[in-house]
Length: 255
Image 1 (cartoon, rainbow, N blue to C red):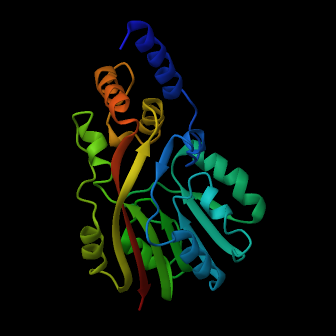
Image 2 (cartoon, helix red, strand yellow):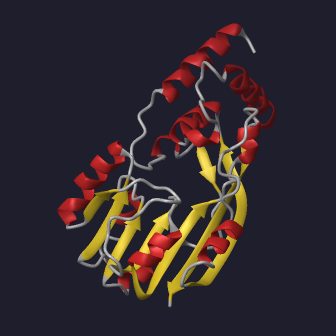
Image 3 (cartoon, rainbow, N blue to C red):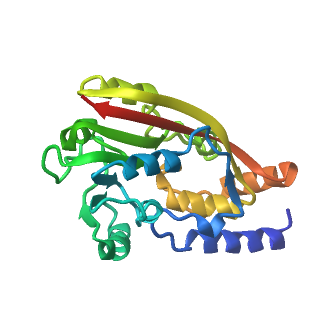
């Protein structure tokens, strides 16, 4: 690779590094980051459950993007949580005009939810950490919990390309099911899936890693220049960069 070409790439990567990321919106790299589709549809399952519910809680709503997809079937008693300040502000701007209460609450395996016992018929969660005992607590009797999670080993081969490992490798379907055993929730659906995540250029990886920082802790173009250059060389050999994505789906009902 010529120095002039490399300098041009470095400038492009730095622009991607500084590109604003808001909510949970990857539209900036939509044509450069392509993922295979799992055998289930979280959206279809959530829509059906929402339409049959009188009260709904969306955990970790991001900027409210996903919840807005269901606005035509949301019940009057709908609430959402979000812990990241920029997303919280955006979610409130988008959702509160629709009568949806957006509550500040950090996403973690230990976080207590700021709601009374047995408040919601349905708790939904797409790609956000959750405290299963708190989910059980806020669910009404016979209420439902639906979650699609990113396995802790998702894109572990991408992390390996940067000579690091991810901090959430323990977070697997088995881990979730073991936690559920300690509650009054009965699992109705439990699936895991591995598919392809395809990056068409290294700049898309830079943008992704800034948006999802736990994939490569402390990532920056300056710090990880050598790794990016190796990926660029691989891209030139293979025409695209393919890694393994891993997803989990769980649906459980409170007895």
